[in-house]
Image 1 (cartoon, helix red, strand yellow):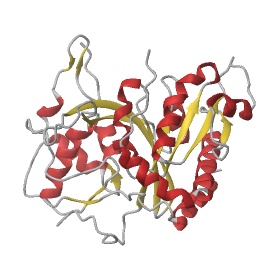
Image 2 (cartoon, rainbow over the protein chains, first blue to last red; image 1 turned 90 degrees about the vertical axis):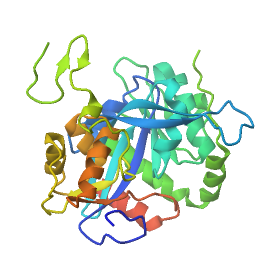
Image 3 (spheres, rainbow over the protein chains, first blue to last red; image 1 turned 135 degrees about the vertical axis):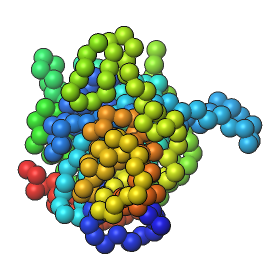
Image 4 (cartoon, chains in turn blue, purple; image 1 turned 30 degrees about the horizontal axis):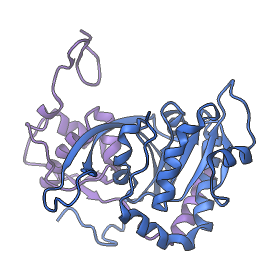
Length: 213
Length: 123
């Protein structure tokens, strides 16, 4: 059999593939972020994601299931000979939010990019990861011409929990993006004991308020 | 109409001139479950089956462990079509696949430490 899901059938030469999501509102710099930290030219593909009908109540056995194609950017960072990190930019359009569960499966954590001129565009991403117990950091992408806010002001504006890091970054600069990823992994390491909350949140199937007008 | 040297043949008004599912022979489901992050690698075994140029191109892209997402990106084909091509290659023994690591054990401290070390080396 060429495919096996058991724990360790592949001693060599396959590395372990890991995933981090880069989320945030439309036009916040997700593609730029992924492209600048990636060691390969940024690529994109279209993936077919499943929407399970959320509005149907008590129609057991006839759940509505539809699929939609969404485009997503991704990049790669080879960490060492045994670990490869993939970054996926989540679809920014609000109407695709319900499909994030599929994208989130198996992810280490997420970076929520925020634009201080349109901070409200980050709210739904923050809600989404909070509700599912997925570890994330908020990275304020410092656009030219945007007013520079203190990270604590941003935290207050988003109403973030005190333990979630807020960092400033420039999505165009690789080292800035890598530092943001370092902050994320450090945060995940410190947040280890809350793992149980994640499982219950994921299974509750809560769909974030998509905030679309 | 533009005739590109690489990538799909596009018509300004009509879009792709060759529909994506043409290369999969109209099939819409791969025979094996593949994730965007599944790693695929050519085994070097000669396949007795000849599928098509896209299959050959896909095979050429995975001489080392390569993710399904990357192969799809390079082929400029939707992921689902790429998965069909790759599952054909799996069935013929031309490639072997490793599913992605699911981070379902968030207390895997050593894994996070390895990621952290790897990221710091990038700086």
